[in-house]
Image (cartoon, rainbow over all chains, first blue to last red; front, side):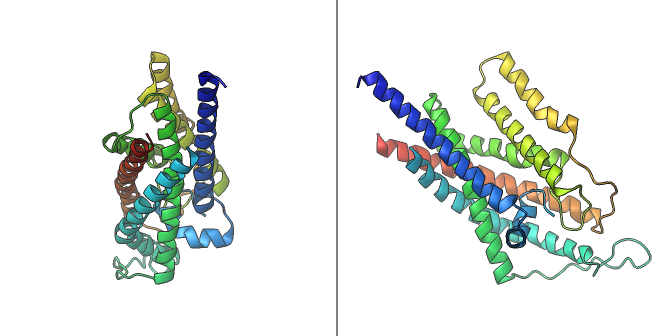
Length: 56
Length: 227
């Protein structure tokens, strides 16, 4: 493996890390802020209002 | 890389979310509880039976407020994972990340997820009229993505084309307009609605600046140790 291909492989794995973390973050915000399931909505109600998410 | 993003993001998000929750319980929740008295019809603000303000006494509800704290920490952890992932991306493109400029990252995050959508879809206190939930959510996400992209271009754009795109991305959602209710028939007084919206934005700005500071401090601190 040349230095260049190692650097490219590292950079690819860095991009995958960035993507996975961002998608995980987005998933969490979807669950806490936007999914309309009754139990989730009831538990997160005040926080949804207090963070400016569309609610009800 | 992924491990470092997760560690920095989860710690920064949990701490900033806890601070946000405390500020919200002190300044936002009392307005929300007051508005709920109008939403339920216990208080009426207009017409022949209009009575005194009837502010509820300050108090904490362990279960309800405990859930709020947990969900606030989770929400900010989600935001922090996205924020730190973007910091990692920027650092890979030779941007310097420090606790000091992390506060600017926080302001950019605040503009993206709170100020930009609030400009046309004000944070809603319970008991105000609103359009159907799905179109509002679609508009909210489109606006947040457009504002987030514009913040990135504002910070890292190198051409007039990029800066032109910033203006278009920031204006377009508001020119199109957010979904509006058919009639303004909500029972909550406008005084409470206005106070609620400004307090949500005020607490949000503080929480986001803190989130940016913490995320950048943890991320860059980890970087120094790793190298």
